[in-house]
Length: 63
Image (cartoon, rainbow, N blue to C red; front, side, top):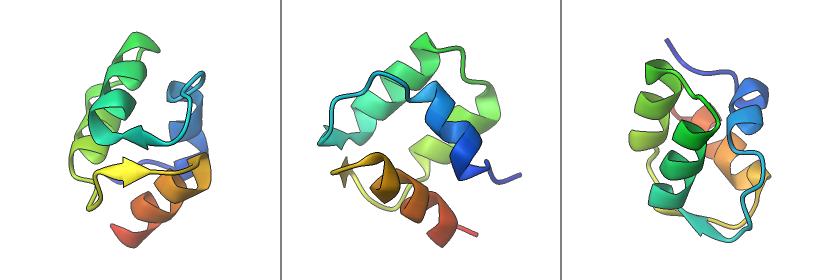
């Protein structure tokens, strides 16, 4: 199941961009992300993100 990009952003609260995928994963886990969110972040096709919008676009591209 693909994560809603808007819901995903609540798990990424507090990240300073640009950020790499490992930073996203760490913050999401700290903010209580479930396995589905973590798996989605791990599968993102890019490794570096300049903004929350970049993350949302990458998630959208996975659909």
